Length: 246
Image (cartoon, rainbow, N blue to C red; front, side):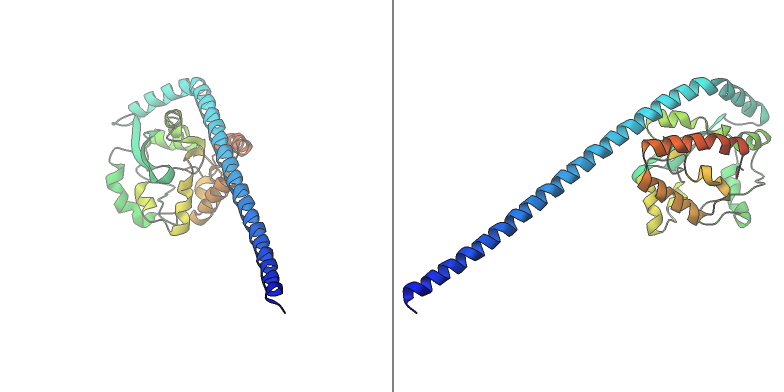
């Protein structure tokens, strides 16, 4: 074989390799562009969903405040007359991505409730890091009634208006509870906490902690406007039936 023939074969081989390389690079660029486009669409979709959810929160919360304001006024008077102490109970809770915020409730316990908690820990009826007790001696007479119908949580509508909470989402946890979370349980902090959620319409305090976490993670993975509306509708009979409320 002549030198010219050898050079021709080498040039042909090089051309083929260059052609293959160009095609692979083209495919890589196209794949990269598709990935970027998909990510941009995902970000836009998430932003639109957040804005719609926020609009729903504000609209329903403002309307609900007008609707339940007489109940809130009567509750405030009852709490004040029933036992000494403030009408509202302000407690630090953990929100989205671990951010702390003041959560508001009508006071349903005596003022020394936090100090008496340690002596009652042995009677805890819940599993996991949460504390639940059906006949908690720290709860006032009015407190038992407003807890049963979730009236004590109505002030959290102000948390929703402030953007610290949503109408629907995982319930806001206490810092001491979050400090005991296992790795997979931290995932429930990836959403804005809510007044109601899948756990509230699935039995509330009757749901064990493991199932509670599963429901929260399920909500986060499936959340949508229609899911929120569905949960809000289911909350009404759940509250009236007082399932797992104490």
